[in-house]
Image (cartoon, one colour):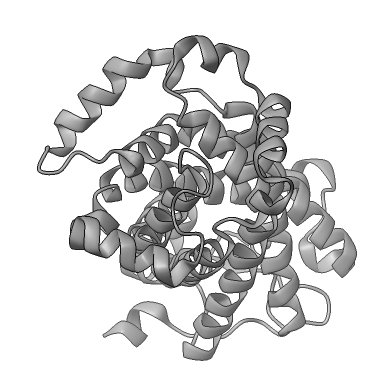
Length: 330
């Protein structure tokens, strides 16, 4: 049944990149996409860990007066004054493990769901409704990816937002056990709804915007297919499209990102998700939802551009087509 839905190729036909054979969408293909996703997300999120720490700590400020005074530079100076430069590596291990798992699910399952859903409606409708196809495939993939990420993200936020800094165990395994003993299984997943609220819109924007920007670049600006340009040009356009998509992602998903940080820090036990949301919103208000937006735009724009570049670099190195190769009507 699954093989009949997938077929030998994607329901969206694409021109091959220079020197690459047409992709056969079998288990080997999806495995390579999963591995590419691990490299893309695990490496990039770990590399920008210091920016993430600054962003999370800006989001966790409760005092409205202090919040207005704080910015990227002032927060970084505070952290350096407290801990020197050792704070820059806080939470790097749960970040690497968590986002490697998320990248595997995000990219690998996106390719799978895109083929499954495209196979269900047929190639002509898959092309006609490709934007909806990208959105539904990316949303489905992210739903799965977040269930793998959430426990690691919860530990990461606990480590990075502890007040005073360093008061929560910085060792990943000790921090994991501390959270487990204090809050049980719920402690790892109490932010899952906020995480879905943050990541699913983010990922829809990330994949839909990327695919559409790549299509626009090659059909309207370069007026060439991907197969007609060099690998370096292909990967350069991949990075440009990824960076632009990342800026949109940051804005769309930031309020939910703030809520996730606040929910993870909350120590209230037994309260419902909606009650906690009302409590947090009552404390920070609408403007508080946007705290840390600038560092997140910098972080997410850079992250997304690099992730797509790493992902497509790996795919092309494996002899596969870069993502968003020119689509053709059947």
